[in-house]
Amino acid sequence: MEGRLDGVHAAAGDEPAWPPLALVKAMLIAVWHHLSEVKLAEAFDGRASFRRFCGFSAKEPTPERATFVRFRRELVRQGLDQVSTPFEN
Image (tube, rainbow, N blue to C red; front, side):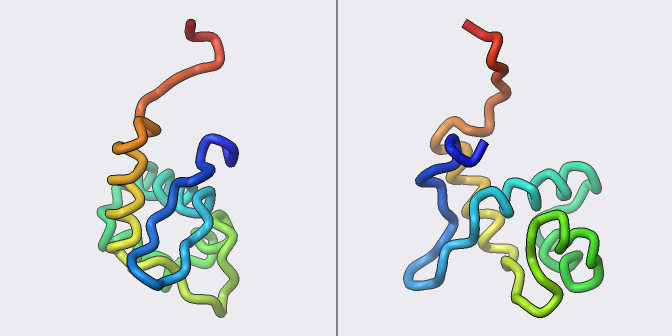
């Protein structure tokens, strides 16, 4: 999966890029828990399990809402939002 995410980023301007795999995991949390980007960003403040799942330590900052919006747009732009399996022709 990390290979497919090579070159996908959600950084704006000079801010550092978040690891793409961590953002995909966050997107999974959002789907599983029916969270908007706003609610997802807020959830990292109170849910240690969400932080652990995505690989964020308790003391480091987590992505903001805009990061998730940009990341989702980039996934769509690159066609990585489509379901595919290794068995498709």
